[in-house]
Length: 255
Length: 101
Image 1 (cartoon, one colour):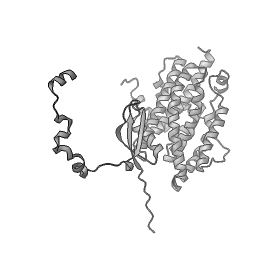
Image 2: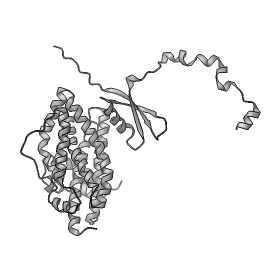
Image 3: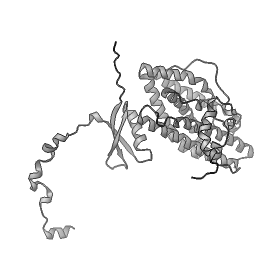
């Protein structure tokens, strides 16, 4: 058991990461029935389920810490836009296939490095669940990495669309390395890793794959921010409306 | 000028799954993919999502050499009229059978 202040910070942290995964999972699920080929349809739906399942596991730990008798469903379906703490990159519309794959690749790389470090966390429940989650992410990363290589090297059209997606998404990447105000406190207690190290590793592994495909990292100086404090793009509200409507129309229903 | 039509159809691959180490591989279906790595991933998603497999083999469908329906006669029938070539032709003497079973 940790002292109260650590528990509160941990709750915030878990909700932030779980929100990332829930929203990304929902975005991926929008591909179901719309992917370019059947095999990819199955793959994307599976990855969507992986993300939603990971969100669920993290919410479960969070509500236990919070100890207010809230369920993980209440966190997912009965909070409003401003209460969501996900980073903005995951809420952007799914776009075309290149856009989805670029976002997956950038996020999977980050998520993989983060959960690898979480396996060594001093918070035993987080390290336990991370050992399971990191296996799923390593598969998800393999999927998006292989696609980046193929889209980047593929045809003129695939290369053009992939570079276009990178140029559009890049300003949203910096937010991955922010954990709002919980950050320093939990790093000191060896509960979460130092995000600066993760950022360096992330840049290296992304650059390595881009170099192999001649895809360029855009040279920009403005980066979006705010998701961790509940400030979102216009897209999140619409997503939540669709995701939450059934649960909110029939509160407390059991099936 | 007529544009060259790009062939966008991906290769077809046959998928074989091994349930336990040491057991034979069973053919379970096919997937489309651009290359072997993607074929393995697609096979994993389509046929081994719930831990069914220990090992997956994939092989390009075009690499499989098969008999054709017209081979049916020449390939598989020849021994039917020589029933002594089938083991069932021989009856086991009762004394031997009793000892064996």
